[in-house]
Amino acid sequence: ERQSLILKPFIFIELWTIMQDWLRIVFLIYAFRNDWLTTSFLLYGLIILRLVMTIVFDRVILSQRPDLQSSVFIILMSPLYNILLLAFRFCGLLYNALFYSPWQPDPETIEARKRRGELPPGVPEPYGSP
Image 1: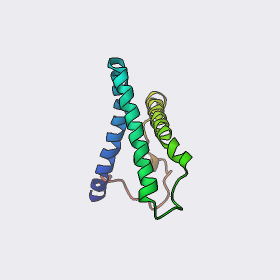
Image 2 (image 1 turned 120 degrees about the vertical axis):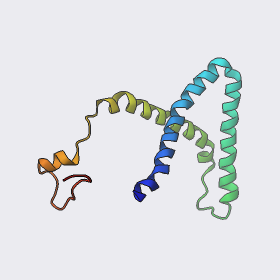
Image 3 (image 1 turned 120 degrees about the horizontal axis):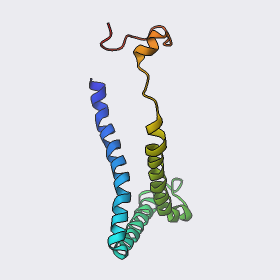
């Protein structure tokens, strides 16, 4: 049980991230429909903030390690990369929800595989088996 308790925070973080990915699109659509000008300025401000943070990290934090510093082109393209990353992640979530998950068969149990003799020798009995 201790091993599964250690994994619980990581599962919670993954679920929280997926929920944010779904809600981000809803909130953006809502914000653009209500006040597109303010939302645009807010998004541009966030893009500029991310760009400034990338420049500060690359030029100040990594100033002692020029071998780890990125080129100016990479730094300027990083906000676009992040926006595309969010868009592709949402497309992946949508594809999973619409096409992949609903059509997957239920996973097969260990007991069923053991009855058919598909498990290699030495596999312990499942918890709670006679």
